[in-house]
Image (tube, rainbow, N blue to C red; front, top):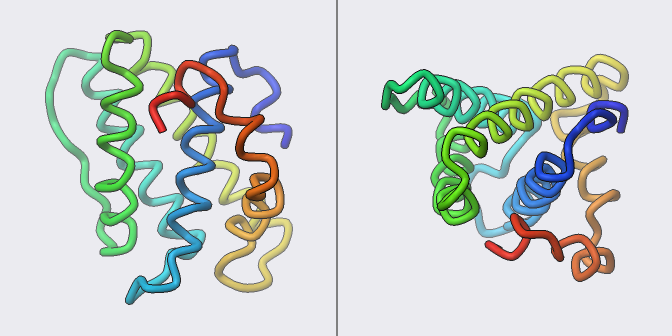
Length: 145
């Protein structure tokens, strides 16, 4: 997990919140199209671009092309809005950094182990198992869940 090595405490909490949400969403067996790694990367890239644009003072929503990535973005948006209510530009910067890093992590994991479309998601599932959730979700961003 070298991609979280230099996160601030707030960024770490945000990372845990987003990763936990992704794992829960990926576990939804009722979804017509389950998430794959590419959907996670695409969703993170579009959200990061949206937040980076907002930091510059422009309101513009970047949208992912795939329907599963759109579903992931739609599910994450209310959670992120709640977590960033009083964070302002600092939250938007932190969110963009975390999401860019998550998208890069997907690419790195897939490059190292290109076996199947859900390698990164399986890694996240192992790290963020149900047994670890109560301990993980104690921070200020985690309380938004």
